Amino acid sequence: MPPLERILVIGNTGSGKSTLAEELARRLGLAFVELDALFWLPGWTEPEPEAFRAKVRAAIDGEHWVTAGNYTSRTEDITWPLAQVAIHLDLGLARSVWRVTRRAWQRSRSGELLWGTNTESFAKHLKLWSGKDSLINWAVTAHLTRRAGMLGRRHDPRWAHIDFVRLRSPREVERWLEAVTRQPRSRPAA
Image (cartoon, rainbow, N blue to C red; front, side):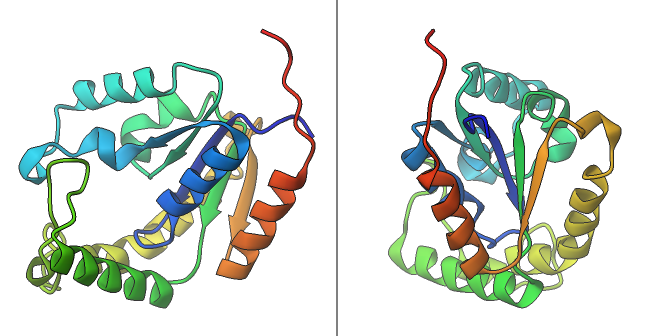
């Protein structure tokens, strides 16, 4: 198996994308690219599409990276042609909703700054009728769409060069991570 050097980590909100991608980056010596950090501006403002795309291009300019995040409709033509592996964290809706709820509660209580500029509002996430405001709503409504999209990409000839890995439980994630990072690593000399 060639060394893993360009990895996409995708999944529903609360699936553990950033946690897995950051750990992969640490263990494999890759750059960690958190797409949320590139996307969100102060006040939870969305950037201009080309400004975001330029940030993504710059972040994956090197040969060795792992991205965490979806943003597929905005970045697929940038990241997917270069990727070797796409990891789909498909841990189930109940687990995602629980994790999103717990994380939002913890972040709102601690006042943790997200991407240097934003904070969580737990009350906002309780607006379950509002997909724009509530990550809990987003986790529920995006779950099946995101799963179908990822499963469809596995059969898309444009992505035949990508190894797809679907992980369905925390135990599978841990076993896969251990197996991949135990492999001997060699990179060609620059």
